Length: 228
Image (cartoon, rainbow, N blue to C red; front, top):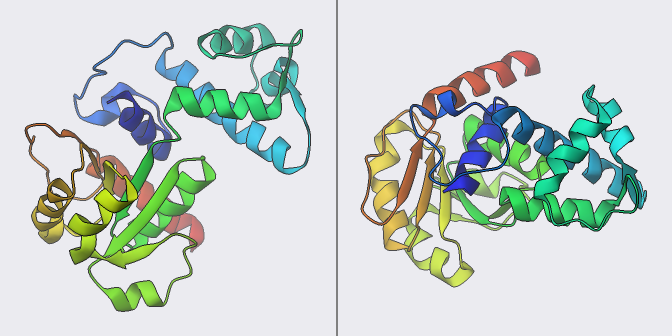
């Protein structure tokens, strides 16, 4: 479940396998955790440039943004399916290639729209991850939020996910709601769960599970301190 692992590494800002509480990569990758972090940051830069209408981006520009050597950037990009023009890349092609490699085109459901859930939603959207739907146990809370994403009551998870083709989910619910939420996700056909809640999700047959709650609680505290 390398896509989920890259997602966890991105939202924690660490890209270190030790942040995954002993969960190791199930498939081999050609890049180190540090190199994966460079890919994530390269995507953020490419996205900024595309929004400004800039059609190309060079390895030297990326290296300057990251404070690295341009030859290291080109080495990282060897894992991507890119048509290079010298040492410059078409911005749109670079974005698409990075998305394919990192799993950003996986469609995720995000369950729980409290402080942690809202922070995760903003951070994941900024990183190019696709959140197809959000769910919360309190429909009134959803009515008060302008999320820009389809939102539904949590009890509709088993019916909504198959209709939307969503097979991966992120949990940001209170610990007391974890078990019920997991049962609903499994009923909805989910095959991968990234648990950002304090409650532990035990391994489920046929479902990949990553418990990242401790890391995400620190992330939330950092965000709230900056906000205040």
